[in-house]
Image (cartoon, rainbow, N blue to C red; front, side, top):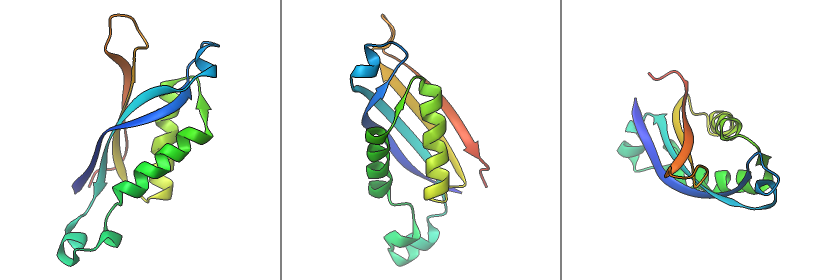
Length: 118
């Protein structure tokens, strides 16, 4: 299996447990590793035969605009489910970072892996 990468996608989201966090947009960083066989796309130089990272990125930005979450864990799980369902991704690894959430830490976040890697 090959891997399509989207690294350090910057997203603006309403996310957090504190009341002040629920009223503002915060910057998140998302890195995706998406399992995909790129052989057919490469052989035919055909975007339709691979994962369109521009379309995926645009969909995730829209998802952020339409939703609010308290936990980065919930946010990560929902993104993983969305990607697997809407883009037929069988396996993914997702790293979600929330900078500035804890004093003296560059970021907090989660890394999840969903699906079967073949």
